[in-house]
Each structure stands twice: as C-alpha cells, then as structure tokens.
Image 1 (cartoon, rainbow, N blue to C red):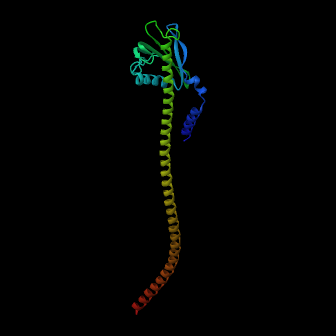
Image 2 (tube, helix red, strand yellow):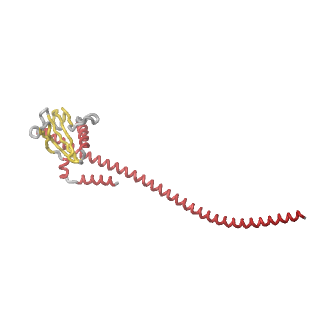
Length: 242
C-alpha cells in the first residue's frame, strides 16, 4: 500500500505542477547535433522517463501515427545503434516531399531522456530554421506532438501500475483476512479443546482419588478374606483329624 500511495502522490504532484515546470521537460526547442563532425540544426525535447522507454515509445508512436518504421535496433537487439533512421518517407506533417528522418535518444540523467530529431531532403540538404522554415517548424511540431503523447502515455502507464498494485493490495487484504479468520477459528477450537482437556484432567484426578480409596478398602477386605480363609482351613484340618 505504501508503494501505491507514493505513485498516486507522484501523479497528483505532476498534474498540479504549473505549466512553467514542464517547459524544460516537454517543450520541443531548436537545437543542434553533431553529424559527421558537422553541426546540424535539430529539434530536442526532454521526457520524464528512461532513455529506453523514450526510444521504444518514439518508435511505436511514429509507426502508429505515421506508419514510419525507424531502423537502428538491429535484429532481436543485436546490432543496435544509437542513431534511428527512416529514409525517404512521406510525412505530410513535416513536408510534402520525401525526406530522411534521423533521431537519437540520450539520458541527461537517470530519470530524464532527451530526444533529438533532424531531417534532410537529400544527402546534404538538412532542414534548418533559415533555409526551410516551414519544414523545420513542422519538425518541431512533430517533436512537440510526440512529447505530449509521451506525457499522456506515462500517465496512463503510471495509473495502470497504480491500479495493478491496488488490485494486488486488495487480493493481499482478502488473503490476510481469510488467514486471520482461519487462525481465529483454529485458536477458538484449540481453546475449546484445552478446556475439554482441563475438565477431563480434573475428572481423571477425582476418579484417581476415588480409585485410591477403593484400593485401600480392597486391601483391607483382602486381609479379612485371607484371615477367614486361614481359619477355615485350620478348622478343616482339625475336623479331618477327628
């Protein structure tokens, strides 16, 4: 329950933060990347999450939203590269032309990931704010849309995790309640057995005392019977001699 409380508390804090608090994390902004020892204009946005989560969601979001498949993960994780590329893809939200889309995901910290996105219309025709302002603005809008989707997805996953932990806590509560009832029943049964044994022990003690008295009486009676028997034997012997 403590873990569930922390998750719900974190969600409430995130939802109550002022918009300015998200500026650094979820605002797509112009920046640059070093490509083949040259600076290229790019759009960067930071996400509250791990680099692997951001990388995975970025790929799935592009695939689901624009049917764009990024390459760079290799086969079954073998040959995985930092650079994710989709070549000659039509993406109306960025440009009506075919373009090459590039992206990387890095981790400025353990809990923050940064997505960098840039694109080119040809081998040496990269989008830029000055050279292709409309396309570059659309690229920024693309990154901003992804950031919004990533934030919503993170909330959905956190809520799903909280719901899962709540269900687990409820099951644990039911298990503990059943165990408590069972233990209480066993305890009651054991106490009843103890009382029965105490009563039986008391009865046995009384019976044992009564039997001890009877044994004494029986011993005295045996002595009397033996004396009577001895007298009769003596008398019989006397009569036989006459």
